[in-house]
Length: 488
Ligand SMILES: Cc1ncc(COP(=O)(O)O)c(C=O)c1O
Image (tube, rainbow, N blue to C red; front, side, top):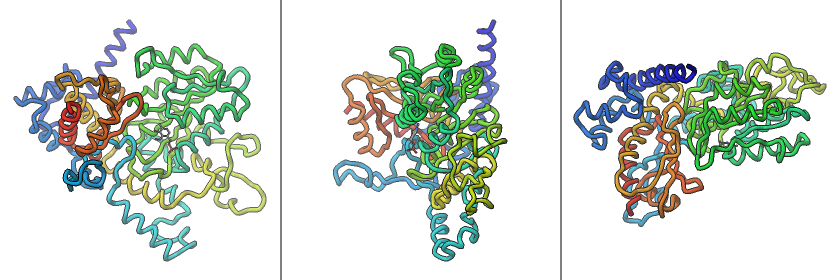
């Protein structure tokens, strides 16, 4: 019965997904006609209906014409092939690259330059008085962004704040929430987590006098698999039960592109008594998040990937409001700094610490105004498009990429290690390159042909069509170039 019920729920979910996808293509598709079609068949279905092949240029062009977000591409600077390729002088050209690396570093929004100039002008004109003068007084430069950050991660504005950078914020949150005892001391993390996250978990365990050999539990996929199912995660969590103090996983896995069921995993781990935190580096701006409603304890992310704020720019932090209602500076584990204190106390000689409301109370230092300025400008673009519309386009774009990749004939050997189910992935597809082809060499060959994507060991190319600035024609051209490069 349970099995039948979950199939029924999945069908309903799939229909919602298809409805969402078709919202973008309402002129060329009918939701009713599509009800019985699985999402990965959408393109084949539509191409058949139009009497053209998915592989035809016209098809990509048609999808671009229907794209309600197509004007957003104009808001970004694209590198020129001549500036990034490693090819001969005569092959270098003035055309923009096809950028498939928004999962690593987003492109520069054109609007950021003038915003930064505004900040430099204020600094030149007002110097220290800039804290309280100008269009964006520096004293509240981060508070100004709370509302837009909250929209991106599905939170209340007071639950989020831009601060520090991702790894530092993970330390800040773990210092606060990791309270190991002899009975409950384990941290659960993905075996293939981003290296920084592994170092952070290990060092937090040591700082608290425990040993990573016995206190760090790594979620391993099954043999010969790259991804890990929710059921397997739950079964590992059950195995360790009440010895788990904290679960800290990447919402979208940086290597495989797998999107975890954050709601389900959070609820399950919390039912065992664990605190649950998410590293949302690859999720923020990529997929829809409802951190408040999912009752997540804490989350941290960077803003330079799908949020396009610039390399190393300020990170973001979420703390559920239920954790910040009460605070006692004498007993709490929170790391304190003057900016977490209420404004009125900040310069007082007596050490009176009354935490600022919500996430703001976790600040230690004053925020970088340059960073907050960049982030404000880039978030305006993301929220201008809206996360819901971006995700709807992204589902289409990535499915289109997948469909074209799967239609490649011949002995080009690669496999897609990202889940095939669109609800279990974001914008990224990771291609495990097989045979004798080296992913590193393939990357150079793609770069010389005008495509930017990245490589991760073992022999994986990550390809990420970011919906803000990638067109369906870009995806089509990318696949054509990939076919050529693979056969070279
Ligand atoms: C999943 C993940 N976690 C952590 C980090 C580290 O980020 P930062 O250098 O901003 O601390 C990255 C960086 O790319 C990442 O992808």
